[in-house]
Length: 443
Image (cartoon, rainbow, N blue to C red; front, top):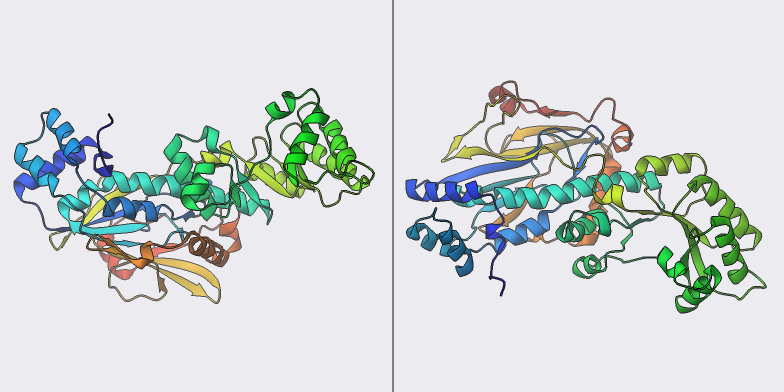
């Protein structure tokens, strides 16, 4: 039988050994930790903050079960008194965070934890794991959605994403960024996402002929999108034209999907054949190793495409699969704390991000000390108090998707673009932080 466990053990061992040391030394006063990204990847002009809802739920439910403590006891590293103390461990801190779906930049806290030191320290690994994955994938998907220029993007990434949890949480992140639907049925159920799919080449191959396969599938699923490139793309489109066109069998076909070959030439040929057959409403969906750069090239060349299926490159964020995301102590027991390690220095204390806007466009962010009077719209807001999730931490998917559209729409065009922004979006330190921050500057 699998032991009863919780997210409490989803941590690095040194978190627990430090926790025991804090317990023995009586280090229990309030600490502040800040979670942020040191630098943006070369191909990212901004990031989309994502993953907060799941992280808060993990904090709310954090417990060391009896089985957890039995396992820890077996490691011969922990004292009986400490293990007993873990039995009553609960996260009772506060969390301030940038709302999910908000564009953020290097050096800006995505969230800050204010809690007794042991509580704030233990959750480091859990929070980084939760926030990192979804922020990586939402940020990639935002580029893919922008490249699609208003055409729907379908998430086909499940089979190559890095494990089941990544696929489930990742599908949510992709949807937040504007991906229209996912092929991932379990993610659809868990997160309330639209699910969509077409057919596989194996379905066509399993029939005596391509025509038999198309006729059977379209009869069972009127309006389906049929895969046409199993043998010969042009011939496949001709079959659709004959089965669905005037004078044919009258099958209802919603579209064709082309998954291989020269997608530009094949889509042009398919559009011509469908139009000649009077099937101007039958759509063309392209897939097969696509990323945002390939999509832009297709559209700039005039590909007559109505939608894209994007899998591996989006599902694993192939060009920027990780962020230099960290979680650092910035205050303890009422005093600012800093780290001066070369290349890894931190800024002290609690903070706030102020976004300055002119009309409907964001022009600059100011990273300031908490409580410092600065112009602009503050981004960090309370989402958890005393271990209880606040309404701001329980937003609907629709509300987050709406925020993505509104907030990214406020960014300058050069920042929304796929090419490196010149100049990058400006983030500067407030006078209060500049006075104590030394050489540290967000980049």
